[in-house]
Structure formats: structure tokens, C-alpha cells
Length: 338
Image (tube, rainbow, N blue to C red; front, side, top):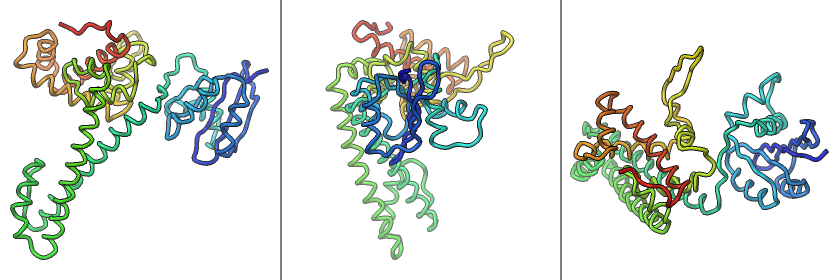
């Protein structure tokens, strides 16, 4: 029988491949395939469904295998674990490949959208910018920590740390003056880098009509719009907006039994960077809602009074995620709320 489903355990140099036919019988088992021979092996197979864990290099291989006529499914590693451990003990590459092959055959499994070259290149801008932001935060905290050794305790506000560190620079003894001066110089360099990447994001948003439509929503700016496009494209991998919000981790976990619904905490699944952008945008929406009378602002203020600030923020972020999915999925047919 022909091979219908293949599971591949990705690695840097040696890959494991497991293929089954329509009855579930193993037809292909290669526990150690060198990197330079993997593409030739997949090209020799008839068109089939190939499953891989969503990890480093997965999107590259997905594009390579799709070019060979195969259907590629990327699955989150946490969904593979139950199929690897059920009835078995131990973990190795061959067992991982078999578990991936079993996982992608499940009818209701959720998959990760495979990204194009353009999406990955745009997402690299976000990752690099976020790295610079984290370095800037670490540098500010390092300045505060070092100055506290000399009895200079600075507040958390970044602009205040910059100002007071420069004002007291000449009063620092010995090499302390050199170190704080170098850190302030590095801080200025990071500010310039982040500003440069902000210009890249602005150019990306202006060049894409979908991003311009997304920015018409309250709480979604250039950074969030371009990140949404880089992460999900047109949103065709999700059946509805609520599924997208749950994929982002903006929906509560459910622990229901006996006909009684029990909703727990927000799951915080999915990409934390995109979720944080939506939450920051939701905070801006809630802050501006006090001076507005539109339906969304009235709903946000009533929710904050009834359920509290942070629950209202997460609810607004979830609503924005659903509307963003509708904008991308329906295109120009989507009508903004009044």
C-alpha cells in the first residue's frame, strides 16, 4: 500500500522519518536520515501528508516539502507528547517521529500555519526589535543596580534614570564614571536601533493594504498589524475569530463536567509577543474609552466597572483579536463596528 502519512522528527543534522499507509501499518521507518538526504527521500515519496513539530527550521522544511507536492502539517510539540507516551516508556527520535505521524492523523487536531518567506522575514524584524528592547531594559536596570552601590537609588521610570545618571556622572569616583558613561552610550545606541526598526515596521504597514485595514481598529497600531500579518497571514487556518483568540491564549480554560460550565484562568497559550501587543493596545482602548461614547467604549467601561480593570483589558484584547481575524479573513467585505 502507498504511504499516506509521514512524521518527521526535525533536528540539526540527523532526522527520523516514520511513514504509515491507510490502515496505519508502518511502511517507512528511517531512524537516522542525514540532513543532506532528507529532501531526496521526501521527493521520492508519493504525494502524502507530512507532519512536523513547529520548531526552528520547521517552516523552511514545510516550504521545501510543499514544493514537492506534499501536504504539510505543523503541530505544537505539546500536542505530540500524549501520543508518544501512551502505552510506551522512553523517548527517542524514532518514537518522536511515530508520535508526530499519529498526531497529524487526528481529525480535530489544531495545526500551526506554515509561514512564507515574506512572513518570516517580517517576523524577524519584530524579533530583532524586541531583542533590542529587552537589551535596553536590561541596561537601564544595570545602571540602577550599579548606582545603588553608591547610595544613588533611582526610580523605575526610564527617562528619569537617563536624566539623573547623566547629571551625577561627574560625581562618580574612578572607574564608576567610565562604566556608567559606557552604559549610557550603549543606551543611546539601543534607542537609535529601536527607532530604526520602528521605521521598518512603519514602512511595512504602509505598504500593505491589509495592515492599513487592521489599523482602523482601536488598539491596533503599526507594530501589532504587521505582527498579525507575519503570524497568521489571511487567517485562513482558523475557522472563526474565537478559535484565533483561543490560539493566542486570550480565552479562559474550561473545566466543565456534569453539565456545569466551569471557566478557569486565561490560558496564555500561543505567542506571548503578539498577545502582549494586543493587551497593550487594549489598555490604550480602555484608557481612551472614558472620553468616548461609541458602543465599544461604552461596553469597555461597563465591563471594567462590573468585572475589574484587568479582566476588561483581556476581554478587549480578545475582542480585538476576533475583529482582526475577521478583517484578514473577509478582506474588504468586513464592516467596522459603528
